[in-house]
Amino acid sequence: MEKNEALKKFLLRLGDNALIQGHRLSEWCSRGPMLEEDIALSNLALDNIGRAQAFLDYAGHFYSNPQSADDLAFKRSERQYYNFLMAELPVGHFGYTIAKQLYISAYEELLFEALTQSTDDTIAAIAHKAVKEARYHFSHAADWCVRLGLGTAESHDKLGSAMSDLWAYTQEFFEMTDGDLQLLQLGIAPDQNQIKKVWTDKVNKVFMRAGYVMPGECHQYSGSQQGVHTEYLGHLLCEMQYLQRSHPQAAW
Amino acid sequence: MVSIVASNPKAVMELLDQIPDPEIPVVSIREMGILRDVQINEKTCTVTITPTYTACPAMGAIADDIKALLKSHGFTKVVVNTVLSPAWTTDWMSESTRQKLRSFGIAPPAHKACDQWTTELTRINCPRCGSNNTSVISKFGSTACKSLMRCEECKEPFDYFKCH
Image 1 (tube, each protein chain N blue to C red):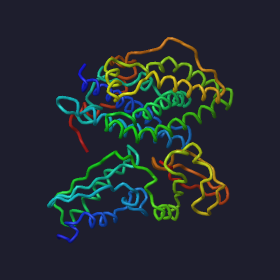
Image 2: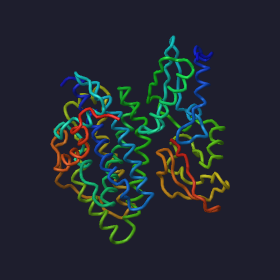
Image 3: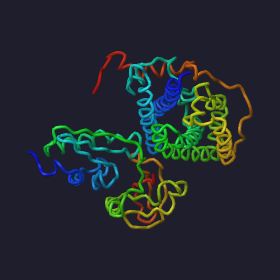
Image 4: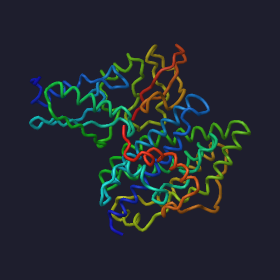
């Protein structure tokens, strides 16, 4: 694979993860369990959407016919999206969102830490900003895991089943395509195997603090690297892209 | 109107120091470290700014304010560029900026950048009464850059500017 093609795909994955996760989190706006959490989840959504804009804007440079971040967000179809399956899963109840946030933000903190060392200056610049935000996201999720895990029997059970259901979507984070291996050689992308080790330890510490045992090996879902998604992404895109598709070129 | 500042980047910097941060009007975009550079090439003025947070929604308003102000001072073309590197940090705030935040009711960042970010929400002084008997209400506040805190002495809630 040509280097630029590999880089484009890598950037789309970073951008799509942020965009889809940001869109899901934004669904909490005005529906949070309490005002402070409503604001917190909306803040997390905003950070993600800003990050999506930065990565998609850069990805757009690698198309023969350059694309804007908006073009990429609003004009690609489901099969052209490369976000993690976990990001597109519905927000569920509050504990389910927190479990998603725990897994994803723990990964992102480590990913962006590694990407600050990327030999690609633009990726390193975005990562320098994103890592600071991801640290807050992780600390928010970890605090809530402890609070719900050590809370009532109901909160413990609800978070516990969410963490255990979502475990089947975690190992996909660490998949590396041939293109990613090529970018690793060039010092652009990180080694996901290294990240996986630290991630497992980081997440396990939260499990222990919150009074849970980390799930063992189980069936793992996969497919997003090939653009194969769950049934949920199409519905999400229908809503997110509706305006641009009904009124092409609409701007404000 | 063509003013004297039109040929001098340093004078333009000082002029732009009038533009307040849209979210925290007591400090300017220069004091916040958002304003990074000014270049002048004949009638074109290129201003470089950097966002505090990646998704800072105030960037559009800031760019509009810069363009309007410079055009009223004789520049026919104003270009506003956004850069991400070096990444904005609260370490760029001067002591006088921090004092302005405090008098506006926002506790300034208590530490250098993020080295102590996990413990940073302890021992934050209340900007109203100065007590350090304070607690966190929520790590995410009214804007991306702030947390919401409460003073246990004077019982008032207040914003804390997160170290970043």
